[in-house]
Length: 285
Image 1 (cartoon, rainbow, N blue to C red):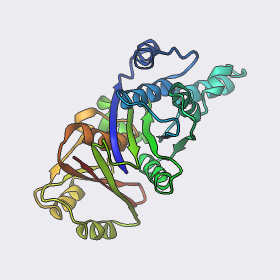
Image 2 (image 1 turned 30 degrees about the vertical axis):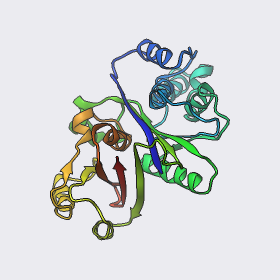
Image 3 (image 1 turned 60 degrees about the horizontal axis):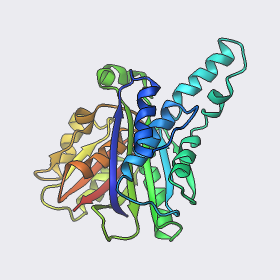
Image 4 (image 1 turned 120 degrees about the horizontal axis):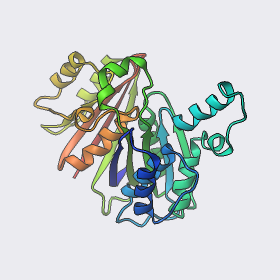
């Protein structure tokens, strides 16, 4: 998959919706009524990614997220169980996370499929795998893949580690089957049930002398040193330290790599709670 552009956008959790509404209006030229924070984050990131590009009508949209529309979901549940009343219609409608993908496709005048993929872990990588299949079989010529989450924690134990670094996040990558005009490529994505198999696979790859390694939050400092030991003189890209934390942080790291580096190869290592791994290899020209 060839990369045409990327975008990494952050918001302050303390900002009210007016700040995001203004940003979306500036990027899209459109005003969206009765939308929530999640939708606005997705719209702002997607349009920023496509700035300077004209998206073909067949461009597929794949929005990935760990938590979806947390704000409206909490509001709706509060109205039902605390207030003992029916939820407000737009709060209820906006609990559907796929509304954001629809608004993106509509605002870009696309005539292709748009979906939202939600997963607690590996969400962005699974979205890239899905789009890779569509590009390979010719179901789409171009695709827009994003990872978006509001500033909440998927696990309580993350609060002590990243509480002061919490951000709203929206990271996007514009992909194509065609190499012309590309700034890089996503070369491979592989899944493994255990660390030994993942490391063996990486050791078999023909990587350049000085790759860049980036790690998901579950990869401990001790384990990071093990990965670095099989990639001599590798540089480390700590994107959480650089940007802040949100639950779709791998999207930020992968997309941010294409913005921060030139003529480098990225190896991104993600790990879930069960000890499974996803490795992604990407190249920026």
